[in-house]
Image 1 (cartoon, helix red, strand yellow):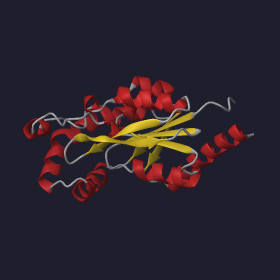
Image 2 (cartoon, one colour; image 1 turned 180 degrees about the vertical axis):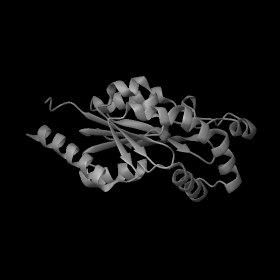
Image 3 (cartoon, one colour; image 1 turned 45 degrees about the vertical axis):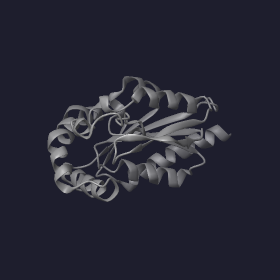
Length: 211
């Protein structure tokens, strides 16, 4: 095993599937000093120059809404042991916060999370382990509803309209088919046995790096 090689794991799944819960559990057990975390959501395209009406017409659940190319550039930087200054996205204004970035330090494992990451051929090529978190649609919708109200300052009707207009059809068009690329599928959002197996595998990888 090449000890210098950074291991890249991708965690995908529908919005509200529990990807972040799985990622957080892995980071907590492996240790943040061993994992560089990247969220695809950091890379939503900046819409600050668009009018409020124009922003409302953007399909945020389509791959084109994200600057995946920049994300992959940052992954390569981390892979090559370089610091990354990732953008910080403001969901209320649909714009990147100016003059402020998120510092990501290179570590032996890069964990990348996002609903659409497996739609990128370029990402799939560099990803060593692809995990899909598979959760029933009603549960995903409820989680998204709670999240968008509590953390993104949105009202119920706009969330429901967006779900019907873009979230559900984009899930069916892009997210669900990407499950076919997964090496591991975690059922029911958070499955302790599956997560523990993942953690054990990553711990073995770290152990081999340190031998």
